[in-house]
Length: 473
View 1 (cartoon, rainbow, N blue to C red):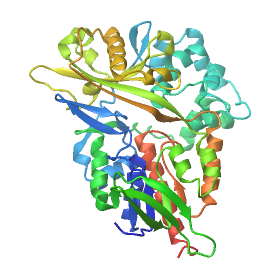
View 2: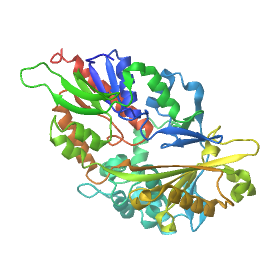
View 3: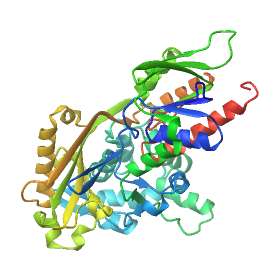
View 4: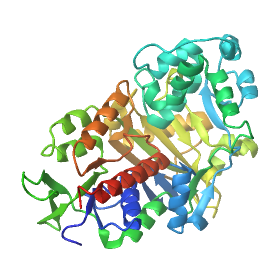
């Protein structure tokens, strides 16, 4: 390891690894330090009894940033794409109902009332304006369309992505385009039509595919770590960071642990790619405003139970081959289950469940989140038993699972709650006023893998610009 790299990246999750990779490609000397014994953060893949379970994210959107990284790492041949026609289901009265994915199915769906459908139909002909200040997603949807669209559609999808509470999540932070369209055009639908016409009005581009790798999402982490080589170091927690004193050369002194020994280095720039509060703790000696701001980023706990079953155990899939197609299902809170939703892993991607000596199926279920944090404090076997019981009730599963794997995180997903955009803006201003300090991670521009890679790329570009500025040379 170089004793004094130009750039230090702290945190070996997807954000830190992608940022370090981009900086290395731009010709900078980079060192990445990860405090844990493995890279990837919450993202991992576990193999048990012939099943392959993804831990954390179950898939990712093949956006431009992700595809560029995948091709760069030579993973294009390992890419799996889910069937774009695979329906998503919502549990309604104990029955799985296909979620509407277009105007026609939205009018036909039993998930919302005719009153709500009428409000959707007349929305392009009305004119509304959002209230002053931040507005929650729940308030926005009730105001525009009604309670049942919130309860049976928007709420479950928001919980599935953010594990959040729609009453607290900020519309401006989670769905900024919705607020922009209402502000500019007075109507979401009319605004979307006008925006499309202004863009040329051509055929709508295809939606990015949901993807994974044959060996699971961890394949991306392993490829990034291999590419970085000795520049990425595990089990190396950072103990302290201090800026140089007045009159000294620019730079930041870093103390960290390496195999039980205390090491130090000096970097011209540091990228913090850790969870928010960890970054705040490390930055306390740089500027005290950092920990105060970063402490305002809330996180929701999540429990995940991956399970394998014999296909013959599941009555839903015995009854109809067509029923085996699907992304999975989401559960409105009014259904009275602890389950937030379940991904039908082996129906989306190959090599997730054994085919012999008999055909198997794998599922990944989630519970907890901002609306049910208590479940994550329960013993793992209790969480596993509860998830199996509720999943069995929905899909008609007889008998016990062949295998289960439980993962849980007390601080799983950042919450883009009311006031989040204000905190992010303040962090941006503070970072800009702190030479050599940069932030990246899932609490800044979206929690998805693709959003993390996009933000990591932007952060790498900002670091490069800083280091190339005359004042740094």
